[in-house]
Image (tube, rainbow, N blue to C red):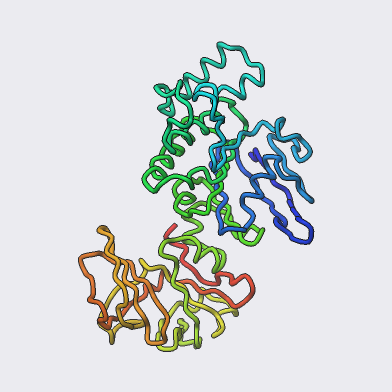
Length: 368
């Protein structure tokens, strides 16, 4: 059953349309991540749900009631900001309990909640410290704890980990995932980091230029992207996309020539009339494998090798000048400037039409 509903939401700043017809539902207890490049509207959408921004059109319903006209303080949501927003003159304990004191909650209730949450966040030994005496990770845990003690209907996180270093981001990401499982709360999280989106979310909302590009589970977005934007945004390194030069029917297959000098055959039954020479072909780095140059679907010279321990990323400059990335087992690594062949796994190939949305017209569906 839907718990939070955003219905045909629009937001304008003068003549600029920041949010365009945003429409989706969130179930109670879901962890939903808004992700997209800078300027896509994800933070504006979060702030509109919080009531910090007004909408130009549309509705937002929480637990069956419209909150579009409700004051932010009455929406029963708690927001955690990127900048922590702690009171520097207050102790950890006072920061965490401040909202409860404003709400005039009983003192024993305040003590009980702060004690419980501080233990869960490993802050119980730091309750008397001021923010200046805390590390970045500890400050962020205090900000999260301040939201948790309120026990809101929805938690809103606006890029809460972006100020932390890489190691702390991983630590806090795991902490947030654990907290969500324990609290079973509804959480909405904004990030530009696709790794955070893929690892934290039950459901991901990908945004582009103020619109929803696709909604789905992390693996649905990875394996079944709706269009070229989603396909290239999700995944690191991003999907290889090359231009198609010609498409010809050969029995039950389509012979596709791409990148000027490469070719492959794909089942014709999986395509529609949009499979033309004006399409683009896509394939992820892990769907490629090395072979002899004469046996490959495409070939090129090794430009860069990134050895990451568990895997090796090899960047190949094809004869037409495009770069293709191969993710492979580190047991086999070609030499720099070596000419290599590359085979495509035809079960994991995508085609995108030449329309404005570059829709996926053929793509992997059996690996979800």
